[in-house]
Image (cartoon, rainbow, N blue to C red; front, side, top):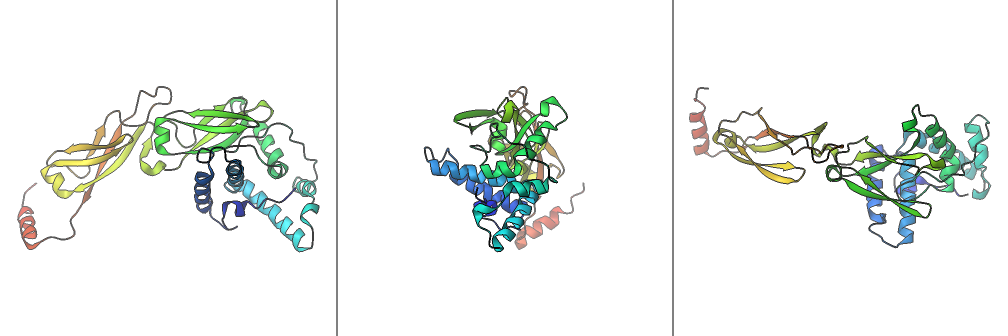
Length: 301
């Protein structure tokens, strides 16, 4: 069995930050995604490899374990050892305090578009299996896999396709999910355990969110506040015009009913969208404009 260089797979250095790893993963996953390369077996295999690398390097504990193995393997090769002679099981038992490693014969948990490699199962398989068995409640007995979606997909709901052995699974992620939401796929994990897709919204800072309610900011001229007018507001379904009454105060918040996130249990029911006003002050004024504003500054409130 060959050593897998997950850092090389993602094209990052060994000291790469979590953000660097996430950025590299997203770029490569988009490039090699099966939906963009239909029928391309090489692209599908590359996508599986990318997902496996990210599964390890994005997890603090797995990455630390992998780095320990990398050091041991590097020392072995530096000492003249041949790649095929490295004793993987011996290294594993040393990490486990000499305990015998159990075999993993069941189907692998899904990783994006396919199962894990022999290398991954040898290094992480038993730890993952024990983690699933050690959960406190029956509902949480299963395997977890991060699935990344956009804010728009969270608002509308979306589909993700996975492959388990020779079978393709299409999983619906419902409208209204948030980062940390778990979508259960019954029996899709090893030994018939459930697979939990843990949602990660990649651009969740697009709107502030509290429950089903959303908050956004709209920038407008100070003169629009004084004289009244319109401002353009970003909503999950596109931009809308918001009427601003004359004399609007800077701390005023506008509520757009029913333009928030869908309710998970009842997608037709949506929260509200709150609009905070951000005032833009002109940097440059003509002499005439300054004169008029100085005159207006004497207005009594």
